[in-house]
Length: 413
Image (cartoon, rainbow, N blue to C red; front, top):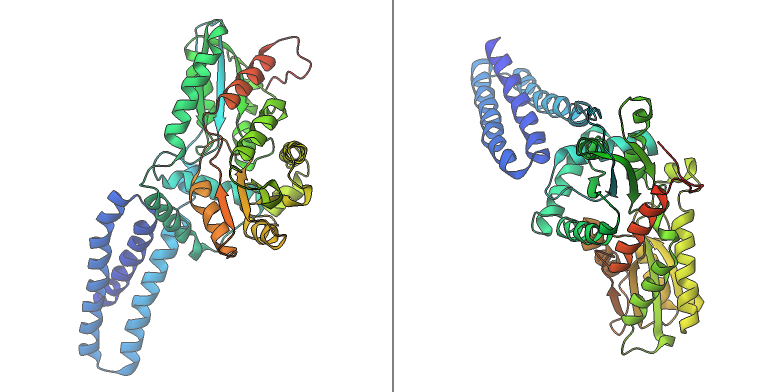
């Protein structure tokens, strides 16, 4: 009986270590590989011992089945525990005894963490499951983490948005210096309590009124999840006033700047040969169905950019909108369509993406490659907005408008 238990234990250890190696960061995953290998080799040793002791086909088959069952059970148990990476973390409470009179601006950035963090992936999967009805099979979940680790390795193990976000924060801080006693911080979307923790930090530094400015268009699934965590604050005493600023994408200067960026990339090409793909990140079908107005801001912005490009001389039917993920038409389809129309100079423009992400760095050009356009067709991919001065001014303007008490659209949370 002891041998059979050892056989099952070896399978459990190897299956659990397989999941750990797929999910954990590299320096932790490396430590699980020897343990998993030892568990599997130990199981094989016990399997050989049982085969010699019993020497019957039925016993050998039972031993092999026990080892496989142990691996599957270990894999399943640890995979089912992955959501606990998120559920174990609770948002911070905002309790600061000091009375402040300062002003705060929080810029909500929905991009990846600087380095691979399995908690961020687990949180994203939890949001997709709860808000967009996307529930992956249990056996497939570790492969999501493994793929994300591979994407981080492809960009040097540091998310492309990290340095750009810091530069953007510095510029916003300098531009907002005209507001007396202002403090500017970034709040991430990849942690359940990231926004609340930033509000707490500002409150404890003497800030009494805070404007939250989201870089993503309203209705973005991660941004909405982050803003929802502010709801309980209105029931807490001694908390600062937190208001949500209007969308920065209503700013006409951003429309002009995006059109100028696109036109600047047409140097050396005839406008009659130019095609433009205005690329959005897209959203899951279930989320779009539940929130039909979620894409309105992005669509309105893209249509205004389209009108500006048409005024500059680009034909309207050669300016298309596409999604990088979830929705149709996707980028590949749009590029193929533009090439079929005779465009020899195609520009991919992430229209409402401020910070570069793994998607814009890796998937955007890959999607264009999948289009397999003729060799004489040139496809140019624009960078995300980054720390563009127009974005900086739009953020400051949106925050200033939200902080004005006489504004009709002020929405205290």
